[in-house]
Length: 322
Image (cartoon, rainbow, N blue to C red; front, side):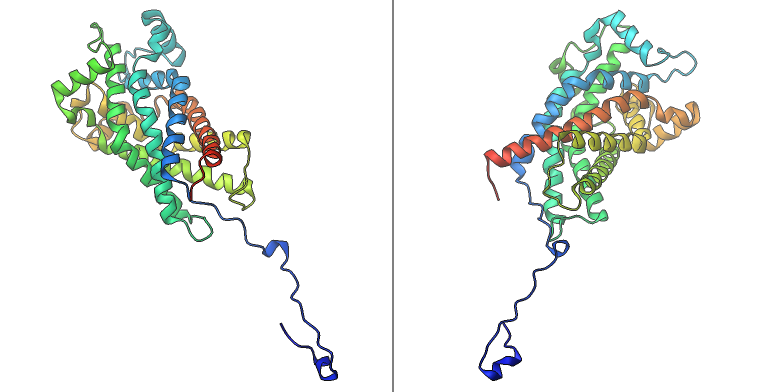
């Protein structure tokens, strides 16, 4: 408060500061998310998503395992679907679903809860993340889910699908029988085949997805991190984030699949697997299964991000936390 010169005449006036322009007003800050709510919302999203999209995952895995370049078992996506349905019925496309279903709930829960963990510790005072910190949070989330859930789950899934392609009757009669046989023959280590490639795949997956998704979301929010952009826009930018991750790391996914198959003993290491694929099958082999993977992942990521955001919003309303 200041006194004007007219005070010398016995009159006191107050100088009132003009309000700051709207553009200068601070943006609402994004709040930290409670880890328990992240676990619950992620689990719900993951369980529903895998039940819808699994057939595309099945076809992708079959095509990646089909390394017989001279006499391939399938001529393409449609032939793979037709052959599977003809030989094993429609539900043959769901072979291995149980391993993913049992794993998808904890996988997605681990992904989002670990991402929120890293995000909460790396965000600035305005709730934002710089590009390096955003990439680090996504990388940390992917690596965490790879070690805790994804590697054993993916190994079992690939062995189940590969088991069905053999000329002999299927070796595994179901999820629990298959897990028991794998552990009995190979020990716990048998469920961690391809750990290095899985960590690389999941780490780069989530690094790309969270980076693309969060930047597109912030753009649509106009800088206001608390603004709800709606389900349709969330679904669209989630799909774009999924597509970016497919083109960015499918070669790693192919190597991971080979390292987890029943013929994994052919490869000494992840690097050896990469080298043999390059030498024997050429560069394009690293993009086998890209189309079915793209179809699954785009919908997968779009669905998961949308359901996660909506479930989290409901939880924020029903379960207020700091």
